[in-house]
Length: 171
Image 1 (tube, rainbow, N blue to C red):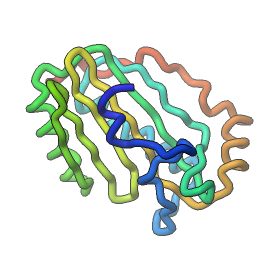
Image 2: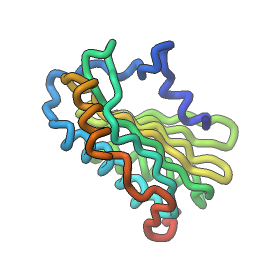
Image 3: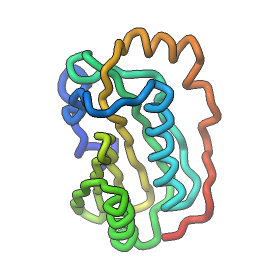
């Protein structure tokens, strides 16, 4: 696990603490999956490079199992060329879309956390020799067992994963 993911943290039940049920966000499971993937794809396109996709398109329980969410991890085994500049540009990009952002520096790594208006949480680590991020979609009301059963039955995690090329690195 990279230092970037330490920002997210989990409790003993494996539930991300920031994943509280969002009654104000209305997405179907298909829309929630697409939203999480689109936000992750946006980061890949913004930073460029060749990424490994480890998204989980099977619903996971959140908020004491009262809801569900989708999450994913993407990584590449190369650093951005200028971590400080990339962090600043990414923060500006996110803020222009209404995200709240925070930034930390740990040794030579830049750790960013972004929270989208719908509650999606993104933690990214711009490290020395690697770049990775985790996207946790909003916690939505619904029967996570029935939704995850449907995801399994429809083989939602069966898609090409490695590598996921995007344009050459811009940073």
